[in-house]
Every structure is written in structure tokens, then in C-alpha cells.
Amino acid sequence: MNLTIDYFKLNNNQTISRFFQENRDVAEILRENPPSVEQSDSWTQRIGYLTWFFFLKIAGYLSQCLCARSISRRCFVYSAHAHFAYQKEKLRSIFQNHLLAYAPNAHRKDTADFYLHPNISVLDLSAQIEPFQKNGLCRGMCLWFAQLYYQTMDQFPNRDDHIRAIGKRFELGANRQAAFLQAMNTDTPHFLFGLLPLQVQRNRAQINPPHDQATLAQQLRELPIGVYGIYTSNHMMLWIQEGQRRQFLFNPGVGTLSLPSPALLEKGLEDVLSLHDPNTAILIDQYSIF
Image (tube, rainbow, N blue to C red):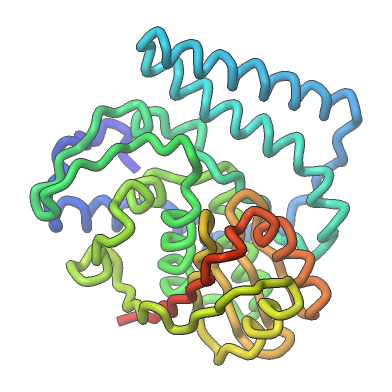
């Protein structure tokens, strides 16, 4: 991606489509990269991450009060990464080798040219796009993951290697394309005007309350082969169903998970359901390629 891009020119379908096409993700996914081995953090390192998280969070709110927008945004982005670094040890212990790649639910640190940018007016949407997203980018990350999945699905004989390679593109957070998708209004039919070559079947399934891990896990495992967006009351995940023992969950804020058993899937859903409004239905969309 050319970092000197004029984001103000992203004001119509043509320029936005080009923006989505001009990225390095597909080339990086197709490059042969063996799985990395990460060392466990010591308890002193984890305390350091947590301390840094609280300091940056407070600094972000103080800067916001002082109208220091750029400083505030940087503080919020870096605090989200510090908190995720603190959580990594817990995620490693829960999922072990089933955790294919991490995925902090935040802007990439190296995309400050985008998240510090003023709002962008998109003429074709008659809307303002706000590049900075303080409360997470789960929807944009999931949509971009689905796009990359279909773009590269024929290039990998090993499915774990394929999903891991895509997941690695999110280990530093959300790139500019994912952040742009997040900034678009939830109701914007971005599949219909050529921004992504994806088709969406809205509300492919609806899971009504009450919810528990076992019930939700069973219903997900019974879905036909395909790619699905799971919408809870405050989060989105991507469920990739390739067969009874070929199932993957991309959960921004956790990572890319291989979940071949019901018990593992229930573990993967536990934290998400604990934050979900128990009186709200869980909606499932299905994504396919044109």
C-alpha cells in the first residue's frame, strides 16, 4: 500500500474499489511462511503490559478532554495492543496449538496515516467515514478475512496452512482496508456496489434466547459447508465450516482458531457469550463469492 495515498479521494465506488485491490495481503498469504514459535511471557512482562495499558488508557481520555485528537487516538490504539499482549498467555493456555494466529481487535500501529486522518466524505454513500474506531474493528476484520479466504482458497492443499496464513495477516491488528469496512455503516450494502466480490445472505440463521455455549456450538456445527458471520449483541466473528472436523473460528480480540471438537468450540464461545445481551437473538449471515 502506498502510504502517501490521498484518503480524501476515497469518495466514490471506483476509488474505494481500487483501495481494496491495492494491498499486499494476498501476496503475503501466498508466501511460504512456517508457523512461528512464540515464547511465553514472564509474569513481570505481563504486569508491565497491564500497567502500560492503564497508563495509555488514562492518557487517551485526558488527551481527548484537551482536544489533542492525534495523541488521544494513538494512546487508545497502543493501549488496546498492550491489553491484548497481557491476554496472550491466557489464550495460549486455553487453546494451545489450536490457536493458529492472534488477532488484536484494534488498528494496526503502523496505520497511523489512516486512523489519524480526518473524516472522509463518500459521495456514493452520502455519508461520512470516520477512520478511527476506538471500540474495536471486529466487523471490518471479519469481512476482510472472508474476502482474503475466497481470494486464496484454491492456492493451499492444506486447509490449516491456508487459514493460518490468512490469520497471520491480522496478528498486528486491522489493516486500512479492514478499518475502512468497519467505518462504514452497518446497514450499508457494501456487497452490492462492487467494493468486495462477496455476496451476502442476510439472516441465514437466527438463534433465539436463551443462549449457552453447548447449544450455540451445536447449531454452528450443523451449518452446511460455507463461511458465516456471527453477530452477537456487541461483537462479530467469522465461522468457516469445511466439514465435521474442519472448522475454524476467526474471533477478533482472540485470533484464528482450529476447533475440530464441540468442547473446543464451546471454549471459543465462552467469553463472547458472557458479554452478549441474553435477551437478544444471535444472527448469522452467509458469505459467498461472485
